[in-house]
Image 1 (tube, rainbow, N blue to C red):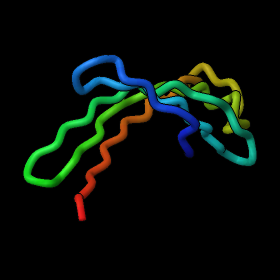
Image 2: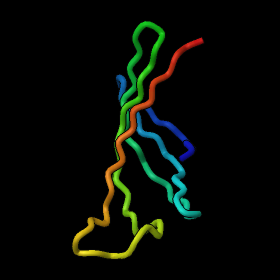
Image 3: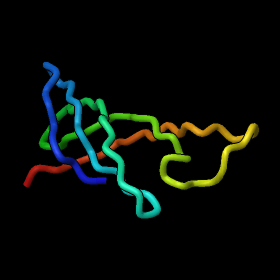
Image 4: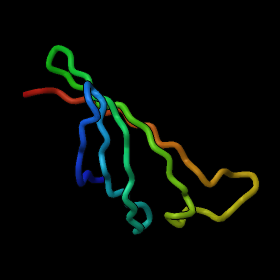
Length: 79
């Protein structure tokens, strides 16, 4: 997962455009996230959904949902 752009939506809200690569297949995904900072530490929190079939993961199934929700939390430290 690599970012290609990040757009501010005001305050601590952003939308990142990311290239997500799974099993050799790359798709562009928009990921809404928030950023907060306290005591020199930052935290990004976001989530997005993917259709696993678009990446060649498994086959269609009545028991398994095709859509997968991905939740991200990334902590950073300023140097």
